[in-house]
Each structure stands twice: as C-alpha cells, then as structure tokens.
Length: 215
Image 1 (spheres, rainbow, N blue to C red):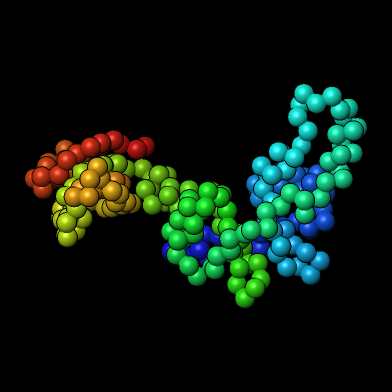
Image 2: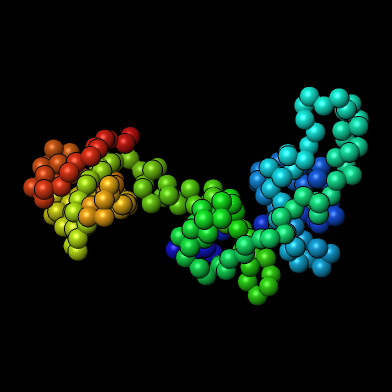
C-alpha cells in the first residue's frame, strides 16, 4: 500500500500571512489538526499545527481582558508560528515508510509532494485507520492471537490449517515476539467452530495467547 492510497488529497491549507485566529477557525471548521502553509504563489513554505496555535494563545489565568486577547491574537500571523523545517514525502512511497518517518521524527503528519506541488497530506489518523483495517477491527468473527516460532513457513502452516477447516481469514497481522526466535500472529476468522480451530492450532504446537468472539 502506497501513501497515495491513504493520503488526504487536496488538503485544506492556509495563507502564510493569515492571522492565527483564522487558522484556528479553518482547523475547527474542517476538523483537521494541521494545515500546510502556502505563500502568495501557492508554494508550500511550512506547516502549522493546532498545538502551535494553542501554545501561542494567552493563558486562561491571564490578566488581559477578552478584548485585549482578541487584539493580540489578531496581530499574530501564521508565518510567526509555522514550522518551516518540513519533511515532505512522495505519493509513491510505501505507507509504512511514511509511518516510520513520523515515529522517528515525532511528528503527526507529512505533506505529500509531487513535482514540487502539494498534492496531499498523510497523518497519524490515516495510519491508525490502516491499522484497524489490518486487524479487521470492524469485522465480526473469531479473533485469535497465537505465539509461533519465527521460521520459514510458520505462517503458511497456520493459514493452510485454517483453510483446510473451511475457515475464512478476514484479517492477519504478524508482530515481533518476546525474543528474535518467536513471533505473534493476530488473526480474524469466520466459518469455523472455535473448539475445532483451537484443536488444530494446538496440533501445530502453537501457543494460544488470546481467543475471543467479536460481535
């Protein structure tokens, strides 16, 4: 899966000289938490987040009057608060690469650039949605978590056994185990009795870590 398949195309943007009150209004109206910032020629020059804007707002315990606060905020421009050291990504890179960049850089979103133009934005929310899809979080079925030896063919043995029982795999995710020699598989399955499935997994000498019906 590539970034272009899960990014928000044509993202909501803000002008570099817009007041921060306008940026906050746009964020709340559009239900987004970050805005790419464009200059007069439509080129991206930075990104501003809701956190940036809220940190710039006066404290609730300030002695300023409401009129003074509004005046001061109206004088602050997006250019003064935006982040200019932006990490862009291409739409054709793997989604997991974008997720790695976000985690390593401790940021919640990346502008997507193609040919020098802003074409989208990929955020942590988009990544979370993919995680839900990966584990079939919205599907009904039997959710089974297994510990298995991390060697060639281990996952194939599991999926083959489920297929032989007539089961349908709705979702499958594999993760690192407690040490380099083990792995963990979380599988969402339908059309196979629970007792029959568990017996087959035990016959494969797999560790059953968790089992539950998801309605």
